[in-house]
Length: 75
Image (cartoon, rainbow, N blue to C red):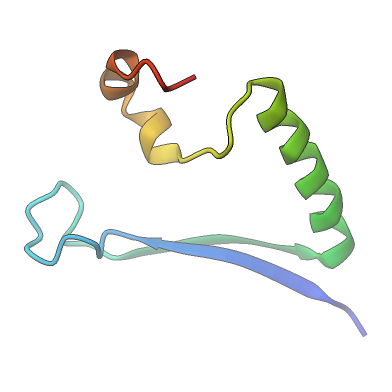
């Protein structure tokens, strides 16, 4: 038996008024892989976050460079 793990997330559905850019379009994205590979990835990801002393990574915060440049808490 093959154990496959999927991590997925949606975007674009949090603003019910659809006023935020992209809020009128729902998007689903994700990754699938073998369970053993995810264990290796999780450890490598933990090491990468520790290296930069950050507890988590949200791409939306990273992509918004102007906001991040003003936020002194952002690595």
